[in-house]
Image (cartoon, rainbow, N blue to C red):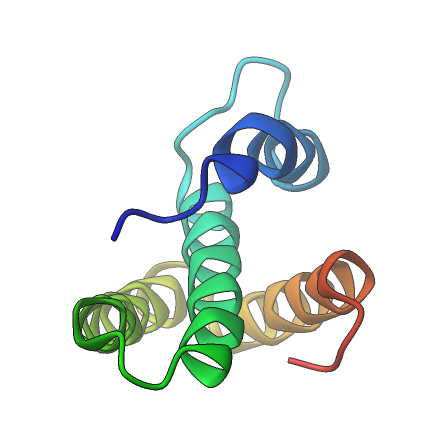
Length: 102
């Protein structure tokens, strides 16, 4: 199961607009972290409602592992304060989009 097309057609442009560092930024570590977090949020809701979807569960676990690597990179390169502020900003953004606390 691929991550919902809704995520890429409607949510991804909003994520890019909210988290980019400059006008042409589409792949900075902040944007990648925000996109990965939104994929995880979507997969969490999907796995909660479809308990027997094993491939989605595996995909969720892989994305969580990827997020752990991104987190270590962000802390190493930009500092923990920057990461904490980004993490809070992403959580607030996703809470609005998914209508729940992440």
